[in-house]
Length: 129
Image (cartoon, rainbow, N blue to C red):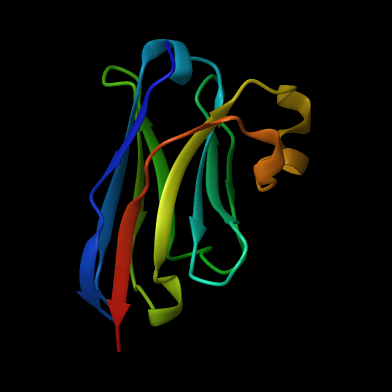
């Protein structure tokens, strides 16, 4: 059974922090690539950060490196996205997604939405200046 449920979005001022959660079913979570994407109005969906839940690798967009941290809790089948030093340009709907892909290609596929079939409903993040 596929299940992805995001939570933790909200409204903050620039410089603030939020932590997003993606609760997944065990089938969806185990040994998969789980990625946070975001989409602002009028813009394409953008890969923000990804994690290999069966390995040690994580991936980040250049725009969030040093500010965002993706992590996992295997006991809870949950992936977190800690977002610090938020900027107005981080404002978007944030989606959690998962895919079973060739692990050796994760670095080339994690940021490409066309590879992902299962998506959560999204959680809104709004950063004001």
